[in-house]
Image 1: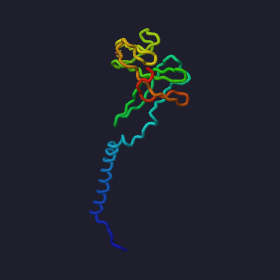
Image 2: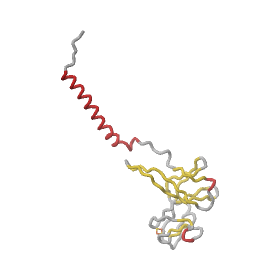
Image 3: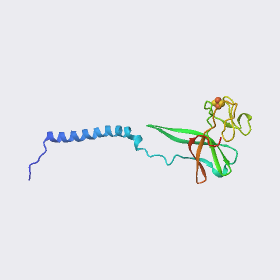
Image 4: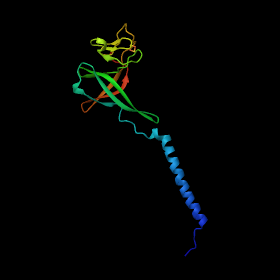
Length: 166
Ligand code: FES
């Protein structure tokens, strides 16, 4: 039988090294995780957001569709709410941004008693149904469009693109 006794000093060294290492790892791991967290996040599936709007309920009259999504800005996550004006032209679905191209107020369909137009109450901006700005009113460009898609009969909205209709 070999004489490999551990001295009191060695025992204390091993124990303190183990406990110290464990404590250091406990402190460092969350810091490392925090530093690289955005790189570990899985990307959302596609760029489209599912809305509660049923496709077969859309008509040629624009309706307001509200939707929200989680926005990740580095370590800061927030819930963003947006809306779109959506209608059908034949089989084609048109989704327009409500953000006025003058100074960014929200436009309303047939607001201010303007029939068959979007109206911006801030400075009386007006747009045709396809988003084209009406000459002689403050907006200098058409409303942006959203990319559209469909899932199980429900509308999905993608990123904003320049208006292709006006
Ligand atoms: S912000 Fe819409 S008309 Fe000025």
